[in-house]
Image (cartoon, rainbow, N blue to C red; front, side):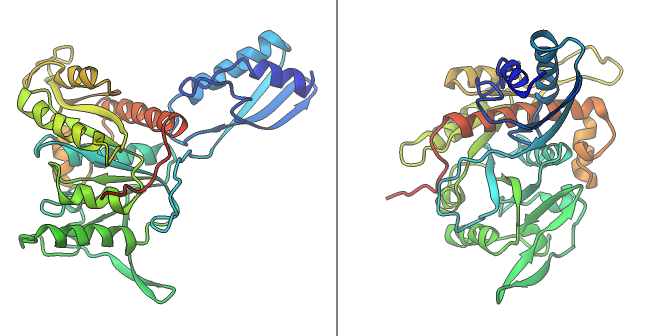
Length: 363
């Protein structure tokens, strides 16, 4: 066997999302041959890549079929998270992807989706941060069991910086960590927008593969401030199946599609899609309507990222400070894992195929 023969065989293995082979994409590194033993590394586009096992099997089969049926193939995996940032990187310079989780209305479970998305990404080896940008209704302190706690400060080159809190393998920050939870935040739009800018510039986020931003509901000042302050890789839209939620979700989709904004929609996820009682695990009850989110995604030609069911443990996890992705219920976690896998694939395709990520400049 020669390296040339092995590379030729691997040039027949496609990266399923990017549509090119592993050799062309420069994803094969450290190829070594010792007798019948072939060792190499596949460099993934993200540590959270859901397709790595499939690519590993395909690479092994290609070598057996095209080079040597008796070869002993040893594949290692590494990752170099893709990013398409083309801004000056004066803000969040070490953050590769910034994902805004949005909804047209409140009460659709956007914070639950954001928290479990961040945890699922981290579970697969990514460096992840979660920013709670819902100034008027922060949820992160309760969801992570840190109510009443305060973040620490540190000095960086003479500037005081907030150190984000860490739990379950992710960094997170919320206005709820800076104010008394019993106090209402009665701020005009400019003050809320200023707080969001501070969460970007005055928090020591460090190196991250993904910064997930839990946005407030609606389409307003904070959304505009965010896209004008940081280069948003894309938005994930959360909706529930009923018509009233879908009508508002359309507004969120329309906002990011406006000509002066043009932030890509990573995809749409349908929360509270159906209810399955524990005693009837094969039954699905569509309490809020059936597949409304999927139909909306089809209407706007968006990636449909999956369905999250109504499950008591999801609600309990958020209330008790241990989101479901940090727990032990594998069946419940699977819906979030599948959704996260679809989101990661969409982010990789967005970075490879769509215009560069940059800060929005509005007149």
